[in-house]
Amino acid sequence: MPRFVLLWTDALLAAVVIGLAVYAIAVLRSPAWRASWRKVWQEPAALSAAVVLVFFAGVALIDSVHFRRALPPAEGERPAAREVFYATRTESLLDVLLATPIAMRESSYSRPLDHVGFTKETIERDGQTLREHRPLQHAGRHLSDPARQWPADLLRRAAIGLGAGLGLAALAWLVVAWWRPRVAARHPHPASTRDALRAIWHRQTELPLRAALLTLTALCTLLGMAVALGAHYHVLGTDRTGNDVLVQALKSVRTAFVIGSLSTLATLPLAITLGILAGYFKGWGDELIQYLYTVLSSVPNVLLIAACVLMVQVWLDQNPALFETQLERADLKIFLLCLILGATGWAGLCRLIRAETLKLRELDFVLAATACGVRDSRIMLRHILPNVMHLVLINSVLEFSALVLYEAVLSYVGVGVDPAMNSFGGMINLARSEMSRDPVVWWSFSAAFVFMVALVLAANLFADGVRLAFDPRAGSWRARVLRQRRSVR
Image 1 (cartoon, one colour):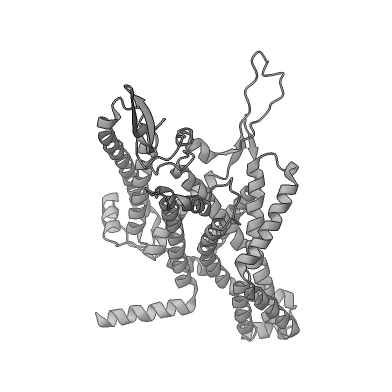
Image 2: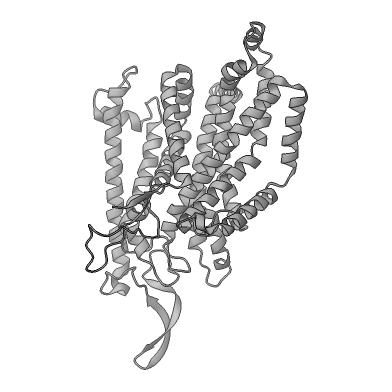
């Protein structure tokens, strides 16, 4: 029986999931919030981006369930009478799913989907010394004649994966077409699944289901081909130490989500509290808070964060006995990095909330509450806070992608996450020297770049949809643009 390990970031990610579930229930019970979120889902780009984000979030959550395997008993030892010892390596459910590519560790570089090594080696053959590419230890070993069978085997496995992905996507289309007429009871809907499919394809649905399902189809086909090829080849090649690059990229998704979500949450208490206090009370308190975030905004963030991270690093090095495994040490470092990013990044949101509070405190309902003798704390909690939450929501979604990029920059300069933990910044940092060699080892850098761009682009598109739905000024601007387009037509 394995022993489950609860890391700091695992617990906080679980708390984030529970918080999102509670928020979803509150949205379903509130007609106003439900109407605003319906506007988000009516944007094709936002809904498609949400599908991509759900996929990445699923990868991050699967990678957040950690455990340590129990060691087998020694020879001749009775299992019932022995004390159970556990392995020093902490694994996750994602490691179990990726057990095959993780076990296919080569000795050095490999191109994507190749069956021979990247560099030429000296080989003695028939009394002659030759320089040629040596076959890989694991990729393509199932082929009896790799030089002849390799292209056909690649095409066959890619076709199988493509077919499986399309089959899974077709099942999703059928499920949505079957589900939609039964749920959308308040709207005109087709009577059969076939008519529902036709309505989805011709974009005759309230939500842009065609865009979402096409995005899901693309994900399913890519995933199907990766699974079909990954059992026998390195889909994105290997790095200098022979580790699979696709595994590193998927493991880096969790680090990006931890940095993006936890750092954003860490900024909220300071930004909301100080912003509301400054805007509501004004006076010397407002000036003090303005002085604080003005000074903080004047300090170079990278230098401040680097100094804090280096102090944390020294403390971790002086207390090695606090951690049973290296992963626990690396996890505490990334947790402290999130706190540092939160403590240094609250100024922008605080400034927005202060300005909004200054406007809200002059409105009639706040003045009426003050005249009736309602306490200031109750006014701030019941009247000010709910009316600034749209700014908090918009800023949180926008900051997520910015922090993901920030982690890449910090890891690139050597003050980011621990090197033992996979991250996009770490992959780019390690690929820096590989890009200057001849021939160029491009796949590690490209994999990190593509995965990070996909995640950040999806987050930005989703954030744009949230901003359009929750920001009244953005909504009115968009309405004016739509009216102008209709008048031109």
